[in-house]
Image (cartoon, rainbow, N blue to C red; front, side, top):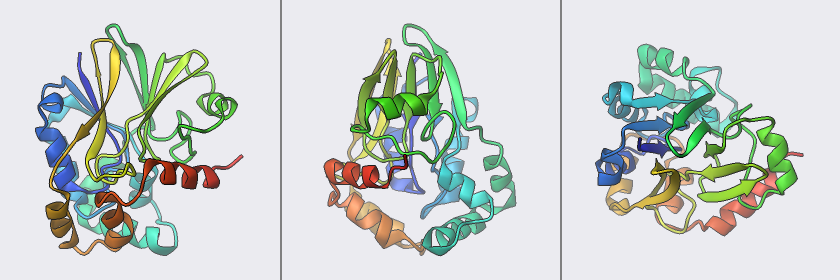
Length: 243
């Protein structure tokens, strides 16, 4: 079985379309959408594009998805969540509200894999590729899965912590990797591959500006122009990581 893990799309429809059209993703038996799908320029369209795959797609919630359907926080993020909520409409938000925090799959050769947005217990904690091992082990808790796939920090990594392998799939729609190319992960043949899909990010920015998403410039312009490196993003997230 081949499983594509698509995380942190953030309403970037051109990036999602590019990944879904990538032959490596198109050949997947299943897609796991790992959260933070529906706060961004094209929330409804991204949800519709994935739901069109029917039972081939499994959804888990991210913090932004949750904020788009609950009482939004104050400030700029709250405004972006409310904006996205309006564009999703009642029926879509009702479906998003049912997304679970985690999904587990038994995959041949890879064995048990747990998918979560941030950690198995919450969609908010920060784990980066340089987070101390003891902190990662504490966040993973007593998880029984051999592989844990997460996102949330928009930087790909693959590290081992004790008996578990922790893989960050990266971000499809808002990568902090020194280029705007979409990042995702592919689980196949008993292994996990960190994947990059290139697409025309300048054309995407022109398209993504049109809906009037409140955080378009703050969230997307620098990321899609490759002006945020993985090292900068990792250091920034680590500085905000709680005890």
